[in-house]
Length: 585
Image (cartoon, rainbow, N blue to C red; front, side):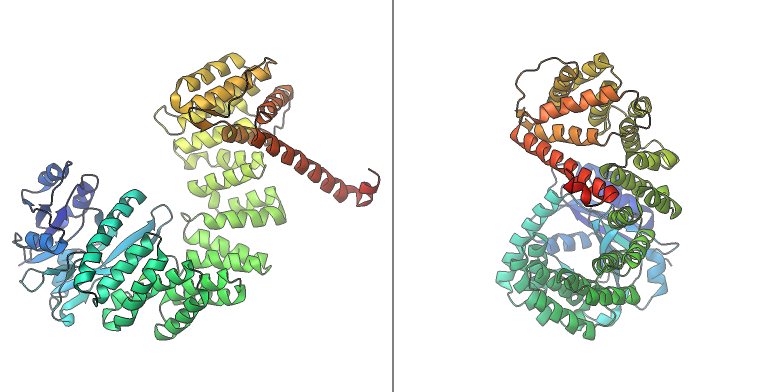
């Protein structure tokens, strides 16, 4: 007979996440028990859409009490516990039922939980938590905060590689609010039980996540001293957080000493070698750092009970390998490491910046573009957009245009593509194509206001001042873009040799200098193969210079720009005619 699995949850104001959580597991459990502890949003109505087993428990600052109240209403043979901001991911045919049917001698299972550092780059920490256990009366929660299931016999607990629980990456403000709440409860629990190593661990983690490593350190040191390898699922992350705290406080020697000691005790703990490599890298001992990063790669993923940062054995380690190689002058090896990092995780785009600058300085823009194309990196939308932006910022607008032009099929109507493709078209002298691309951006898109601003630039460069002024007026009428609208109206008047009133330093609390400077720098990057409209470009450029002179910051920026132009001219002349050219001046 198939064992019944009951999902238990305690919730409070989780309307934003609850449905996603339940959808991820609804066809994998036989019963859903939800206990609400005082929601004021739509949490209860969402819960009732999925189950009739919704109960209410008055919040008393005791998570275990609420969890155990939920267990009292369970009718299934096994209990699965989840939080509303978690989702379950199933690999192949692996399910909770297959897990408990396969390992029939176990009464509880540790499941992997992924805590993301960044969803966009695929960085996350893996921990193991006890979330699946028999409903036989032997398993109940203890601890008012960061509650745990009490275990009477470790041999009854199995270790499952899946299913996997993935924690959502909450907004920073929400995370900080929860951590402050947790700290208050932990401090109270600590007063009642000051020798509890688990409380030391959680206090250290909360302080560290609140960017208070000096507060975190003594708690983590105490936890690491008192937790044995019998509690490796706590001792391993404590070790990592200790190293991170030492590093944040600049106490590198203590951190390195602990790394060396830990590497002997836990020779397969990949993350220790990665963190040690970061320490040596920061101390500028690049040759030693290289050895530690290579060791992290050689280790691969560590044993499951050891806390693990995804990528410390692959793309993160290769990225730092590249950095260290570059620092010791081995550019070819650096390029190879950066490329490997990008191949392993195209979502992690940071190596592209270093790889791009390395190739651009050594080989030039044409080689750089073609090499990235040959590697297939430009087929990936994120890397393609990033490369285009890097070319544009380094004043190689034609290559920026080619990146997006050649790979437009990869984007499938992406609003960001229309914006950046339009931008590169405009500043490479293809104003009509740029306007056509910008016109495809939806009014609801976050790219719509800056697209209107770019359209004004294109129309002005084409000499269509009437339509440019109409768009500028639309920006001016919108309070959120009034500053930009005013800037463009001034520019259009100056371009037509008309006078303007004194240029304000700010409009509705927004400074006029930053957007003016951005327009000025973008105009400097203008490169067209056909210079039929060069007088219009020159007029636009002179108008921008006039606005820049209206503020002290703008004047200083212009002065530095002129000095840089003179230095660039001198360098080109020296390269062509030799140092004797300077004597003839």
